[in-house]
Length: 225
Length: 167
Image (cartoon, rainbow over all chains, first blue to last red; front, side, top):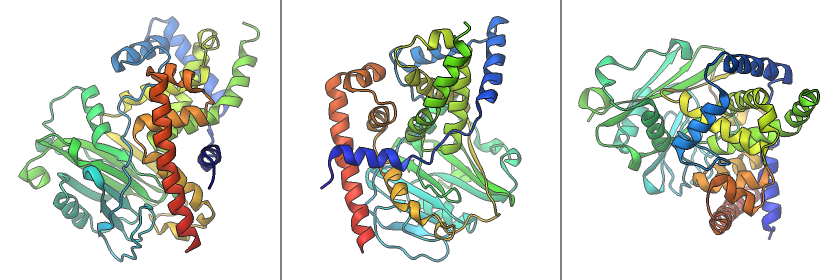
């Protein structure tokens, strides 16, 4: 039986490979621009931070997490469905199924999505909708700069940027895989308000992949219901 | 002022990775965490005379990074360059040796946000209970409770991992 300290050390060490690659000189260059902007009367970092803290309701020494993604809840369920071949070993470990994509229902209305290959987006969309996620899903070529705008007829979501960000943060959280080739997301269906749907686009262009998410209105035309 | 660049460089070198890991633990998004921490460190440089006197400059950077995230979210985007085109089987890329660490990272990210923040502040920034409580604006007893629940949940996941590893 390992001690709590040993457990936390192991967790800490699991992040050891995460290192900031931004060099100091690049940081200083960016800092100089920020400082110059402040001196010119622009938005200062300090004011922005203070304003953000006030809005978020944290103390002045607080750790702010506005719009942050909610964590994935532990899943005890086998994958709900998957694209292509599936070699599931029923488990809570998120990487134990191999398929183009996998949808797994978890406790508390969570739905975990893992995309490994860009195949059968319609199947993924159907599965998500069947699991209570009003979603429009697309797989396509091109990277994020090529992401089409949200469908005009579906983007009638009236809320502030802040509210939109907060809502996204409650609805959609990152799943985690250390494998950069796997896209992992968690949807908290209980947080999706009536009338709101998700627009999920996954892209690749041969040099990488990307995904984008946006909130759209839920309707038969936009999200199937 | 003469000491400022040296002080910041020293801080940067010693803090950047732990700040990144703390933000990563909160966001679960490596690319976003890197961008956010880089921006927060630049803001720390720009306000270094103030930040350097903050009781917990690393917590300031983490707080700033996560706060910055709010303005980047209207349509959330995530882009990852790959050495090859396909999104493929994760077991084909020679990263199996990192599986235990990956599972532990996943276990941490499955915790509720507040528990993750408490754990991250403790293990990456070495804040004690009182400091963690101050940073999060919650009572020390609440920190202790979050830490206990988080540790129990992590232990359960770690046990599962060991079981799977031995199968």
